[in-house]
Amino acid sequence: MPRTALITGITGQDGSHLAEHLLGLGYEVHGTVRRVALEQPMHRMGRIAHLLPRLKLHAASLESYPSLFRILGAHDFDEIYHLAAQSFVAESFEDGFSTMNANVNGTHYLLAAMRELKSRARFYFAGSSEMFGKVRETPQRESTPFHPRSPYGISKVSGFFLTMNHREAYGMYCCGGILFNHEGPRRGHEFVTRKITGAAARIKLGLAGELRLGNLDARRDWGHAADYVRAMHLMLQQDEPDDYVVATGETHSVREFCELAFQEVNLDYRDWLKTDERYLRPAEVDLLVGDASKARERLGWTPRVSFAGLVREMVRADLEELSPKLDLGALAARVGTSASRIAEAACAR
Ligand code: NAP
Ligand code: F7E
Image 1 (cartoon, rainbow, N blue to C red):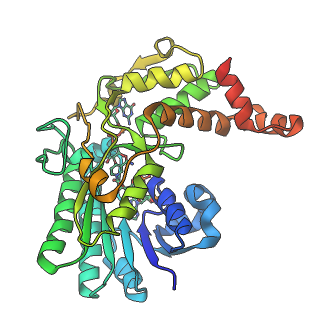
Image 2 (cartoon, rainbow, N blue to C red; image 1 turned 180 degrees about the vertical axis):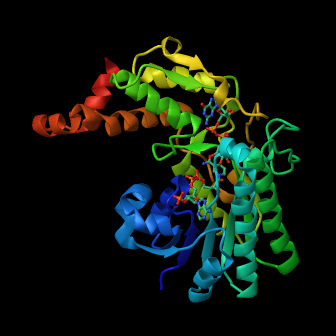
C-alpha cells in the first residue's frame, strides 16, 4: 500500500513542488483546491497541470470547517501538509481580516478536525521567517523570539502556536516549519523575485520599459522552493515531532537581486529601475537570515541551489515563457533547438 499524503494549497508554488517530490517517492498524493480552481483548471492549476492525472483533488476552502472535516473523515492520511494560506505580506496590510481568517482559523479548523476524527496523520504547518519580523538576533534560529510586523506574520505566529499546542496538549504529531523565503520559476508574479526576473526578461525582449519597486535595501535569505519541500517531508519522517528553521544562511538585498537578474540578460538594472512609494509597506522586515543548523544536523537537510543559480534559473525560465510572444517557440522548432537554448543565447549577447 502506498503512503498517502494530503497537501492543502497544492495549486501554489510549494504545493506543486511538494506534490512532485512525494509522487517521486511513491506516495498517493491528495490535494485541496478551491472550487473556483475546478471551474477554471487551466488558469488556476497551471503549476500542477503536468501532474493532474496522478493526483486526487478535493474541493475545500480554509474558510469552511465542514469542507475540511469531510475530506479528513473520508480518508486515512499518513501525512498532512498544511500549505494553503493567504501568503502575500503586502496584501495582508490591505485586508488583514481575510488573511487572519484564512490563515488562523483555517489552521485551527484542520487541527480541530484531525483531533475530532482522531486522525493518526502527521501534520506539517507552513510557518515563516516573517514571524521573526523585527529580528531580536541574527541569524534567526528556532529559539529566536517572534516579533511579527504584518497581519500575515501575526497569522503565522498564531498558526505556529496552534500547531505546537496540539502537539503538547493532545500528543498529536505536529511539526512547525519556519521557512525563510524560497522562490523559483513557479513563484507568484506579485513577489519581488519573480517581479524582478519577469521584468528583466520583458525588458530584454522589448516587451517592457521599466521596473517599479519599493524598498531596495530589505535583505532576505532566498532559497529554492524545490529544496525547501524536501525539508518539509523530512520533518515528518522523524521519531518525534519538532519545529525547524529552513534557510540557506545567506542574506542578499533586493538591490543585489536586481543587479544579478539584469546581469543575466546583460543589462544594468540602474537604467531601468524606478522606486515607487506604492510598494513600500507600513512596517518592513529589514533583515532576515536563518541558521538551519538543527535541520542540517537532525534531518540531514542542506540546500542544493545557490543564490546565483536561483536567479539564473528564474530569469531563464521567464525568458522562455515570454519567448513564444516573439515566436521563439516556432523558431526553435524550425531550427531544431529549444526555446531555452535561444533564451540562453539571448542572455549571452
Ligand atoms: P502560494 O503560492 O501563495 O500558494 C498558496 C496556496 O494556498 C494556493 O494553493 C492557494 O490556492 C491556497 N489558498 C489561499 N487561500 C486559500 C483559501 N482561503 N482556501 C483554500 N486555499 C487557499 O504560497 P507558497 O509560496 O506556495 O507558500 C506555501 C505556504 O508556505 C503558505 O502557507 C505560505 O504562507 C508559507 N510560506 C511560504 C514561504 C515562501 O517563501 N514561499 C516562506 C515561508 C512560509 P489558489 O491557487 O486557489 O489561490
Ligand atoms: O518581499 C521588498 C519587500 O513580497 C520581499 C512570502 O512568501 O516570504 C515572502 O514574503 C521584500 C520585502 O516577500 C517590492 O518590501 C521591494 O522587504 O517578495 P516579497 P516577503 O514579504 O519576504 C516570506 C518568508 C513568507 O512567508 C511570505 O509568504 O521585497 N520589495 N519592492 C518588494 N516586494 C514586492 N512584493 N514588490 C515590490 O515591488
